[in-house]
Image (tube, rainbow over all chains, first blue to last red; front, top):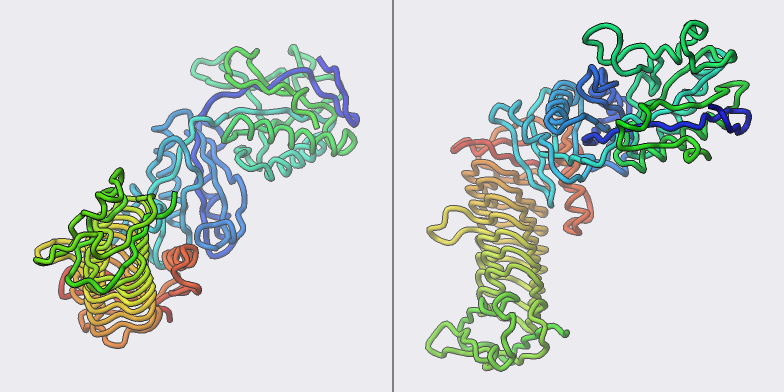
Length: 302
Length: 269
């Protein structure tokens, strides 16, 4: 139970538990930042949790024109899944339906990994015979004719097996507004960490779950120990001062990226302080038996 | 180790076949044995020692000091390392190269880079006809690698090219990119008659509107092109050009519709 306090914010003596995942990344560019982000946001929609979406995806970083292959504004998007086949399927469906279709877009590999995933080398068939293969230096591109010119797409992107999914922490506050302020501060800080994403809406989950449930077929269900309205009737984790809990779930390219993101997020929450933000920080785990990766909150402090 | 250097003593009395003098074929050969390699192509039968003064010992770094239009097949089939010729080259310089770097600091004769499959060939002067092109009877020309001509190229540059990049920086002769199968040909400084004559696929990228294009090429618009940005940036990053060639929305002509018609000629608006 709580044993540490920094800047008035209590830090639970607990840990987050995370799992190994497969991940890939792509760089999407467009004529403007607005349209690069639009393509990226569209393709990462409905990608909050592998439980129901098949993958977890979000924008990792906005890239300035100087950091993209074609000199236009871009975004690096990361996609996480439990297996390579599912990741490949999600990547092609999402790029094919959301990036190929987005005005002025182009799509490049965003990761050099241990293996390759098909990108343009599968999407090229949209060209119906008019697609053009171009090898420039050591990179291979496909040019696919579309109605505003050409969709240029790198043939493959990388896959990493070193990715970690499910790094997390809870922010607990006296009001919903304070909890949201703390969570937003954390998401803002994590946005600066390369190689880490927060896939839930705006980076924040309010329906943190436990495994299983009383109903048959439920993979996950309400985590009543953290629901403030059940504080009195169940074995609650919440003290009398807590009326809202929000969870930040983090997926990272590597173990280090998840740790860096947790540190950045927790630092932002602590700096915001208990008056405007959270009074307490905790984390979700399964007793340490299921996950390969453990992030002890006391190691994540600023 | 110092570069293995072949200094030309006098103008050769006959055409020479320099294909034995590549990093691969000279590896592990003693200098006195190198001097005994026959390179003459007539009854003179000149040996290396008759033509060149040999110095140095590193076969992965070969230098020819002094050139002649009689030096044929320089670095033929090389796979790695570096060969530098200070002077002019004869026919088929860098023929069938697969890797490594060949630099000719002078002019090259016909069929330079013929059938290249990889590596980088740079000619600081002019190149003759049939740059990168196949020899008689061969189905495809250049099949990979990068071929740069800082001066002019003759007729039929990139003939039957299949893969890779050829860049000619001071203009090419007639029928540049004729019968191209795929790949990219960059020509700055103007082209002669009918660039892309009978090309099937592939890209011919120009710095200006071609003066005399075949009527079997058709206008295909000028939308914004990411490919143009990528190739412009690549050419500058590789030190091939100093300024963008195509710009953001080049004009496109598709052809040659006398054959398959899936090739393109791109040039800035």
